[in-house]
Image 1 (tube, rainbow, N blue to C red):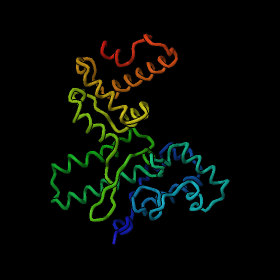
Image 2 (tube, rainbow, N blue to C red):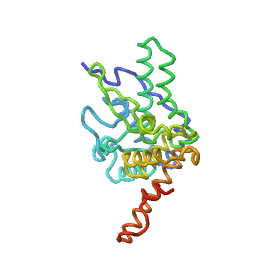
Image 3 (tube, rainbow, N blue to C red):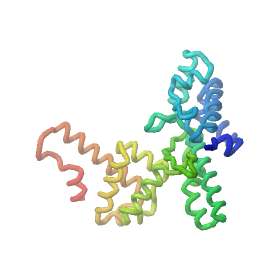
Image 4 (cartoon, helix red, strand yellow):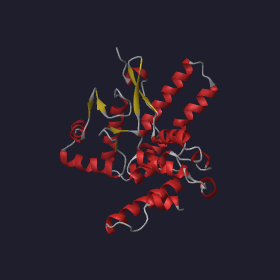
Length: 264
């Protein structure tokens, strides 16, 4: 029989300082904060810790309103605050989730697995940092309890567990495998930067295409030091060029982004 998160752990970490100082939460009404703490409890008890669902049922806005126990009119204000202030996040599958809780669960699972392996310090330092670095970025991530986090799930002994398969790791992995020159730049991507690049480009694939173009730029390591700033500028140049091409709608106009890169 599969064990739920309630069986695995009796309680989840609650960061009192973040709760009392997070500006997004402070902008919310007391009623909204009350609903949010209830949602955190539900996400902790979820079969997929950190994801808002009951059993196999993913909760939508209507389901959350029913669980909140408040009128539809009051809930409308609560839901607007949770979403407008970036507290309640939603992934590409339409699931609401808590990034912090997913991080904590991933870290707990990693520590448990390393314990089974005898606590190899080299393996632990290499892998746990992928999750721990996100938690330690408080100065750069002011809305710690509510920032978004992409995640995947895997089966271990028929039990669904949360793993830290975030966009930062995916893009870093892509760079290491396909872009050795980009990997040499002194300032590599952080989690926030990876998310911003994907938001700017429209998809992870579009970011990877730019990274490959950067890799083919012969003087990349001599001219640039930051993966994020370079990639972000190239994305903006490509978008600007595409917009100008659409406006002009004539052949032989301004050189395309790809041509500009080749002649840069």
